Length: 91
Image 1 (cartoon, one colour):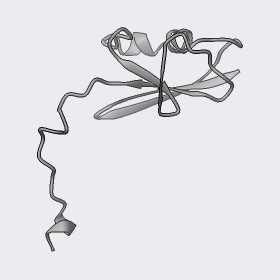
Image 2 (cartoon, helix red, strand yellow):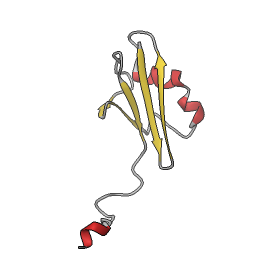
Image 3 (cartoon, one colour):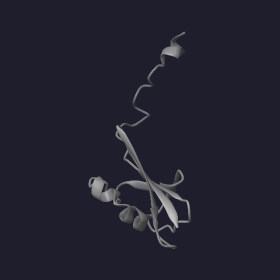
Image 4 (tube, helix red, strand yellow):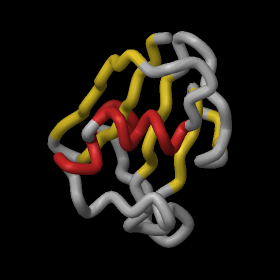
């Protein structure tokens, strides 16, 4: 079955479509994709993962067409960072 693996950094986005056996888990698909070799700083013990925007466990079984997403840790707390005012909002 085909699944997608998505990971984004501030300057670049990565989207891979891979073929995996039926009953493959999120963790197995991530490992098979090779993305951990390209980004060795990804630590699946610390990074959250999801399927189509919903949090998922690493042992969750995938279905054909699923998109596995690897989420980076938040580096700034949105509650403490002032909102940026858009130029259009100043009118």
